[in-house]
Image 1 (cartoon, protein in one colour):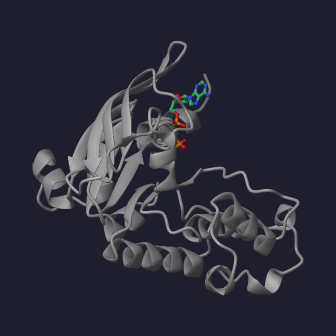
Image 2: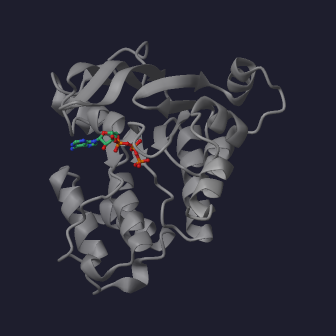
Length: 262
Ligand code: ATP
């Protein structure tokens, strides 16, 4: 496949659930080695977009491409390049962390041997899960599940990572580890598309940011692009986010809630 293709491309993606238009007409491209952040209010359509890009749900219309391969027309080619972490990842509860990584490595036909073993041990060590041997994943905390989910992607070194809220539930040290790791992977050519509600994560990590609102992409670009679009050179990402996803003022809502009943 020629390098002319973007690592990820959403082409006019649309997803409807009955009368709910979860994703309306979303198009964007992510270049190789770029960290691209997806922001949006609850229910804006981020997870639905990520799930279409990884082939988990079929779009009502539009195309999802990974490294130039259509996720639905050429699923083997696309998925071989892809690692996807769901916001609620299913991780087999009856396996230990080590067994789960082994299972994933088998599933992706990674040759058994010292190299694979070493990579597995390094990942377990990195995520501080090596000494939890013998413990079933079902007994893991939320953050530990998140970490073994990430390890299960990284064991097979995909060139594109689609991560739905990867730092959700992680303690500050683990969150920092994940941020540093993603930066290092991107520097080595891995493409990362992540959704997050943590604006600091988006601002620190992402070269470009897309903001979704009610199923639409309302802005895409670098911080400078977003500031220019909002006409405010000093705006923080929080200012931009609140401006672009305008809802009722929270102070007015709180006042109404706490107002004495007639
Ligand atoms: P959050 O930040 O809360 O995770 P999100 O931006 O990821 O939100 P989505 O989960 O993509 O949002 O949901 C977008 C819209 O689609 C919401 O209105 C949601 O209720 C709806 N939706 C998502 N999945 C389904 C489904 N399986 N059936 C019906 N409606 C759905």
